[in-house]
Length: 272
Image (cartoon, rainbow, N blue to C red; front, side):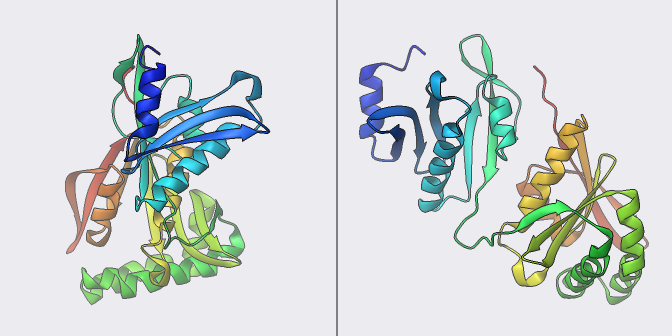
């Protein structure tokens, strides 16, 4: 805490590209946080006597909104060991090994995709049997409108046969399948099969709106709960850039006939 001096704090408040926010109740300051115009959260402290009242979450949300207002599509921070679980529970994911900087404790680099102006509010939940028809429709439409740009017609037709409503129903019984829904409409899906991410599709009419990232965040949270320390995904050519933006690294190509997929991996466990 050696740098939290009166002089330094005044300098942070005056810094042109830094926003310092406080949570107040009546005339009392309950918490303080800061975020740069580049989306980096530097401060986030709440008074111990008001913990477990939702003040930390409210302040964090305000910081994220300020970052989004500055044009950022994600927030970055380095968490202390004490706050690590808090940030994980608020949608942040670790994106690098621990670093020094907090006395004798490690700091954990973390990031979170933000709901930008173009993002659609949606619900992520576990798939139900009655979702099979809609999940199938989303997958088939995406294959025909998006993946068909990178794969020959015969490859698309073969893949389509694996995602009929009955085939999807069987997958729901074997894997952990998630759906993204807007109102009552299923617009996306993703699944976790052991440590492998499979069947990530978002309806073409709502792509580039953050839904895929929300699905992958749910997959990752589930994997962490199951103590899975590495995720793999057989990515289509169409989705390689998407997974790379989430921290997955290409390790090899795989072929089924002429169909090329890129096997990508991401570590969820970092050395202490």
